[in-house]
Image 1: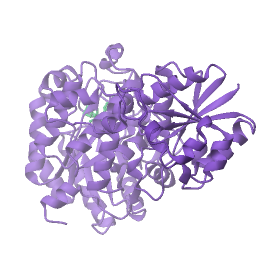
Image 2: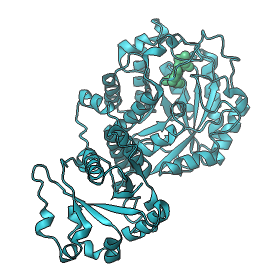
Image 3: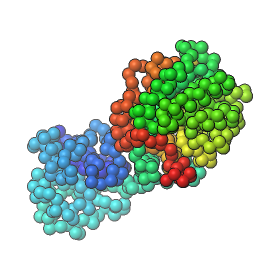
Image 4: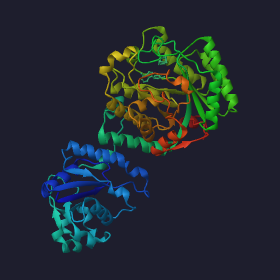
Length: 535
Ligand code: 5AD
Ligand code: SF4
């Protein structure tokens, strides 16, 4: 290798003009040269939101190089992230010489707008003496004449032999244009946004993150999740603990003492609230038992622990009793707000009626619960328009929270027969992140949970959702001996011995997402607090 063409920039994000510049430079210098993209790191003195995460920008650069057929002749260097800030080019060059060889031929690729003040750069003389500078035009579409020629500074004129002015089709395409994503007002427009991938998807997610930080800040609330029982009277076609699945091991119900112990733990650890989740049962014994458990949790936590229930459809009376006992929030996913789709993924009997489910959500609202609903993303037959309409449904119901996650196939369920009709995991994951982002943009002040099922699609799934949009996470605090029996879908996290949800892991996960844990807070949604004069 004869030399290296150094392309510094923020690449926030990389776009076609960068690729065209890179191609032109490579063509100009020939096959002995390699092009190095050197993205600038986040500047600690500037707001974090001005630049996208360096990891994301690098990922997009690599993807774009591949797409442009440049992956063999160009690479990315993270050298700038290792240097003190602000980073001066001369320092980066020194470091790059250590990496690529002290005597390597370096060509610095610069936009013409940099020439005017080049003499003010740190050690400018030394810089131009040790490398050549390839200049590309800016904001130039048809006119390929350089503005810079007419105004070339005395410094540049003095070193004119060091400059090479690139020619080529360097058409305009701006990072700003990519970042300024239009949201629109209709489900049809939203459906198009859900289909975005690559830099456009990142722009959508970044917009969501900015709105999230501006509206509700970087706090993430913890809810200790107890999967109270896998006994279920229903037969949803997608769910591993459906009544007719005889292959799920043991049916269990966590003992009351164990739940109280879990509540005490959550309370002491400052979780602020807990969630009781179980299969659906409408019998009187069950209702009574739950009522008693709620009262005991309230007692053991001095009425301090918030209680969220996720126990399916119940009569108004039962909902009321549970509320009187101390529960304040209720999660009841609509699963899909498209009636037709709902009916395809549930048996057609009165136990699985779409109307009843809808009615139950209304009842919960009427009783004054903070209501959460949600959907599964990536179901067979589900379209982007369905998902966009789900978001419209959340808005029209004015819900306080949303818990949604990917649909994950389960072998012992009827819907498994349609596994060939669902999106591959990576696509489902991308789609999920877009749905999270769009929901945050459309409902900035609600609570959004980063759900466990995301972890089945990507090891970073839960933290990505938090980085982008979510502000609630539900660490699993179900006693270990029950976990392998709460097997809603395949590859479910937390069913083996390692405690993925231990406090320090969750803290680290939230920190990686650029957020922080809010301990000892109930974590009512900003929307709820606003509507109830609690601000
Ligand atoms: N994949 C993803 N989520 C599932 N749930 C049930 N089965 C699956 C599955 N196969 C979700 C449903 C339900 C919640 C308790 O678990 O949305 O509301
Ligand atoms: Fe039961 Fe809920 Fe599973 Fe349906 S999704 S079978 S109601 S646990």
